Length: 442
Picture 1 (spheres, rainbow, N blue to C red):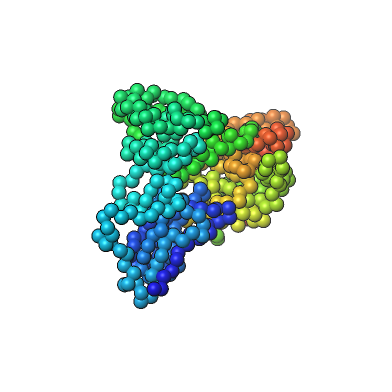
Picture 2 (picture 1 turned 135 degrees about the vertical axis):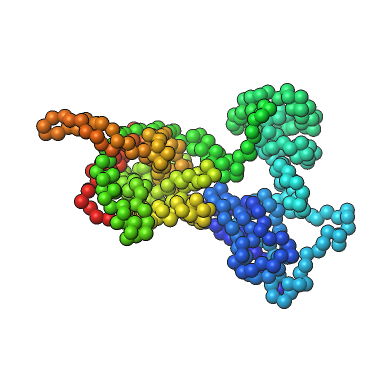
């Protein structure tokens, strides 16, 4: 029988596994070469896995929701004239009491073949975030009652080393059904060793409240933000700069630029250019901290935080930004932003950033205190540009004029970036923007 094993391909540097979020084909379906077979998600980006061959899909080796290592076989396709002979066995061909053997991954998650055909149940695994082990009986009860892993981790256990017993869970469920679980419960999740892991807040919804399940991406963002605050000592410095010359220069050239290049000339590539120059001037800001070692990055790869239509955030990266002129940066910015909003980014395009820029001014925000994108040590927020009356010093004395002003705020890791260095670097970014050459062409 001519069969072809489809493996989970490499999806970018540092990505070792992915979660299958949706199968787009089922066993018995014909699939064309390069036709999407599955949707998968990593901790960076969602993407589709195409079939490298044409044939009939014979078998899916993982369920939706399973996490699969790169290089693992995820499906089998029968190619050529053997397609018709490869129809998957129907359920009636199997004895009614026969259950397929569980894979190692299915043992971990408590799932088994055919789960995708039932109502989706919460994923209850044998060991939660707290490190506490859950018996199959406890997991089954939790699954039937619709408990999430987070809620299960919060139930107090009386067994050995804090293990949750059947009685513990039943007592909790009884209190839960009577509304006796506190409206807000602040507690500490502990590991089996007794070491505190994290503080959690349980809020019980009231009648009329709307409960929205966090999307996978929002959970990842939340975890990433919490991890950054737990890792870096955040300090934010803020300056106000005069960008009148820059605004006038852009207004003068933006129509010509769009006609010639077919791209809009926004402020973002200009900001990125100023940041890239500053990182060359102050390379310590283009670094990462690994234990007690500082790694100063050779390449200047600037991530640009991009808001998506669903309210989530993604940070595509402009690689070697200091090697690109303004035209190249403008095209890179527009291309990455377009593909980010249409979910067309490749995993490599959101990795390897060494510094991040976030344009909070796009929402009329004056300034912000952004959270560092780990494992970087700095992030710059650019505020909205506003016309304001300001005092100008001239050779004939002080005068008041209407100028285009904006705030720059930079958060940096105070473990290795002191206030002096952070302040000098932020001032340098401001100088590149304030002293914009209005005579330059683009």
